[in-house]
Amino acid sequence: MSLSQKQLQLIKRILWTVSLLIVAVPFVFPFLWMVSSGFKNAAEIFGQPSLFPAVWRWQNFLDVFDHQPFAQQYFNSLYISAAVTVITLVISSLAGYALARLRFAGSALLMLFLISALMVPEEVTIIPNFFLIRWMGLMDTHMPLILLPVFGAHGVMATFLMRQYFVALPKELEEAGKMDGLSRVGIWWKIAIPMSRPALAAVAIITFLHSWNLFLEPLVFLSSLEKFTLPLALSNFTDAYGLPLWHLQLAATTLAVIPILGVYLIAQRQIIESFAMSGVKG
Amino acid sequence: MTPSEKTATMAHATRVPWLTLRRKEAFEAWLFVSPTLIGFIIFFLGPLIAVGLYSLTEWNLLSQESTFVGVENFRDALTVNPDFWLVVRNSALFALGLVPMNMALALTLALALSRPFFGVVFFRTIFFAPVITSAVAWAIVWKFLLQGEAGAVNQLLASIGIDGPNWLREPDWAMFAVIVTRVIKMVGLNMILYIAALQAIPRDYEQAAQLEGASRWQIFHMVIWPLLAPTTLIIMVITTIGSFKVFDHIYLMTGGGPENGTLVLAYYIYQQGFEFFNVGYASALAIIMFVIVLALTIVQLILRQKGSG
Image 1: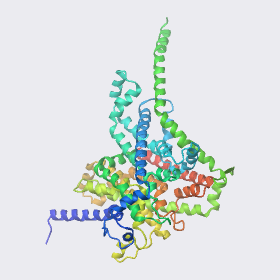
Image 2 (image 1 turned 180 degrees about the vertical axis):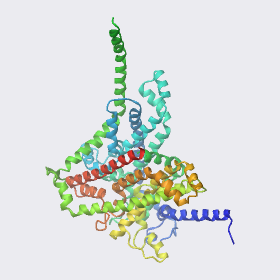
Image 3 (image 1 turned 90 degrees about the vertical axis):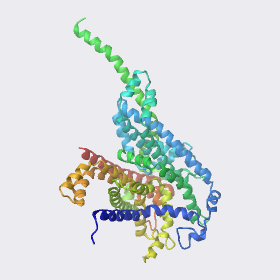
Image 4 (image 1 turned 45 degrees about the vertical axis):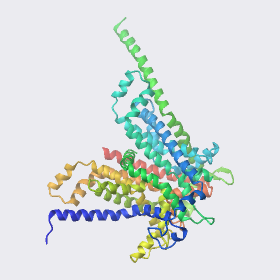
């Protein structure tokens, strides 16, 4: 029996898809396991693992809020990430615009200066920044979690992304704006900014996620539970002996991850493109 | 008025407003960059210089005293402290394991997913999902899955007759486990960079090779792979630098253990600085990390220059 070309093609297609599905298992499995274990009770966590809990324990998701000021921590993460995003958008688009459009002595040197910061890990400067923040009296506040990402390597990356985008934009509209007597800030705000929506969206997405997932800075600067951000709070579900309370920890992790994942599933195209943009240009 | 005087006045007349315009533009430019620049100096450049100065002191936070000791901290790291070379070995192992695994998987997935077919968006979305997930959440879940006997991974292995190790409690397996789980977390990023590069290759190239009777492997080997070279170089350097930055993943999965088997440079800096309060020594380590990353960045810039030239 011989197969037709079409059948062969179909079999190939199926084999291909099946092997991709197998590769996808370790990518999907942790999410499924996280959600299902968040519903288990403490005893079942240590019993025979199964993907579906014997009893769906919704109570875990309420207990999370008793164990830590989780609502407050959730709010902290949200407002800090929002603040970081807005400030980064404003100052990176200002600086990016100047570096792309305005001629000034030292601009090349400034670029080189900023490039040097692009790749440096925050671990390198975290020790002096600790003393700086302590000297400023900002320990155990949210200020360092806003200031360091905005002005560190991440902010520089945002500035570059904006600059690259502005460089590629046509100048004609801006020159027309100048003829109409717009000031420099007017040109930036009324003409350049509206034209650069894709770059702004990319910066906003990457910045929000970066701030939302930040761990080292909260770990170093925060000490009170009600000031914690989500990543730090998640790492903190232990019993009196320091052993993990898995069911609560996984329920809390589910609460922290699922909304972001939901937004990602809706806007996956835009989000993936944003990362592609920053990766290629950063 | 002589002709030469006339041109001189004209030049003068036009130069003045031109100069002020120029000056105004420069002034506005500095105004625009000043928030970024001032913050950059305070929170990046200043601290970078400070960490260099700290690295030359013996400074324990508990004693509150700092004394100048020259390059003693560096000598201590390179010749005295056995932990340092263990950390270097671990960081190198981590990078050597992670970078090739990440890139090979990223390229394979990109080749499979660069052309539209039914389900392509579904697969891309899945492979990229861990990238946007917090490293903390990812580490917590994998630590849970990789527990000794009760862990889901070992239960799964047991069901096909394999007796899995206690992943995070045995030094060699722990390193293997943190590398693999990190690759799964980050491979999506390199995948999309490769997909973008693959989609930029004109299809004529492949079609021409096909007409010449080239096999699929030959097309990849002779046509696609050389065209991907610049992307491959950039991805390689970015991924290597990224592997030196890994902190939260290891902090949460193994805490640097067991027996310091997963203690890498970023974690060692944190440990020395914020757990043992050895500010001088930790700063020297930070400088060493800075030099490594700087060297890699320079390599990348040179490679990029070559790639575009």
